[in-house]
Structures are given as C-alpha cells and as structure tokens.
Length: 201
Image (cartoon, rainbow, N blue to C red; front, side, top):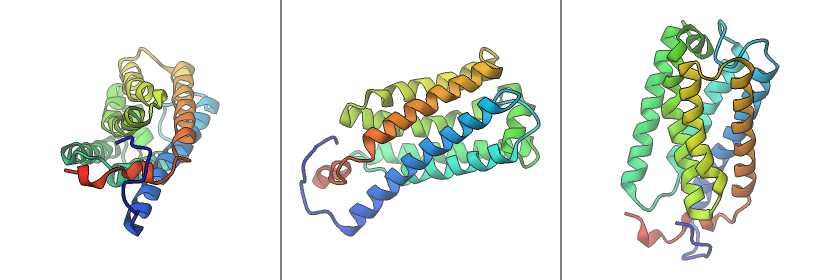
C-alpha cells in the first residue's frame, strides 16, 4: 500500500469501494465532532448521566460510519481485513451489551456502569486500525496518534482518571485530530487506495 501511481485502470467497483471507504472516514470525523460539541456544552461529562437521545443517534451513526470504512478498506493482506471485520463484529456485540445495560440507550448504558467505556474499545480499535493504516501508507502521522489516543482515552474514562469537562475536552482533541486526518486523506487520488491489485492476497 501507499503507492502513489496508477498500476492498472480503475474499475467501477474500485471507484465505488474507495468512495464508500472515504465516506466512512468523513462521517466518522463529522460525528465525532458532533459528539465533542454535544458533550462539551452539556452540564455533565460525556459518559455520565441517564442517557441522551442526540448522543445515541450520533453514536449509532458512528458505528455505521466506521462499518463503512471497515468493510470497504483496501488491504493487501486478507488476514488483516478478516481480523478488522471480526473486531467490528465484536464492537456490535459490545453495542448490544450497552443497549441492554442502558435499557435501549447506548449513552444510558455508559452512564450506568463506570467501566462501560471499555465496551467502546473494539469500535475505537476499528477506527484506530483505519487511521494507523493510512498513517503507515501515506505518512499521516496523526493517524498513529489517533490509534493510540482513542483507546487510552477510553481506558482513562473507564478507570475514573478522566471525568467531567476533562473527558469532554479529551473528546474535542480526538475529534480535531480526526478532522485534520480526514482533510489530509479524502482529497488523495482514488488510485492511491487501490495500489497494485496483483499484490492482494
């Protein structure tokens, strides 16, 4: 990956899958920014309280956006893609657990259990995999930072080491980095994401 040249003519499927992959990245950045704004302007921290419908809707959208990137990412090594998809399935199982705990509300589930943020780790892992892959391929350094900071942030929140406004501002930092990452990624030529298809295995 990371080849900045056209190895073969792009098919319609190539173009569609790359666009869907990048749409997932763009939506992830927009939704994370929305969550950061919502929780920064809320009276309590991002993972407390009895649940918030706007937060729930944004969170469901984030699962969908990350899912787009996960299923349409182009990787030379098929085992990596299989691992990534399985991790996303685990994240959906964790989502189901949060909905059960919160009686139908994801944010309510996070507020009910102090360590509930740990159930977001698989989703953060999926998004972090995407950003790290792009960092590796195209030297988008913030992608590596996101892959490390997102799970670390959730661990701090789950352990009580980061709460209230501090947790909100941490989310703002993550959202800002994701926006920078997105702006640097989405305007690359589509062929960059395809690379040499003869190397896929």
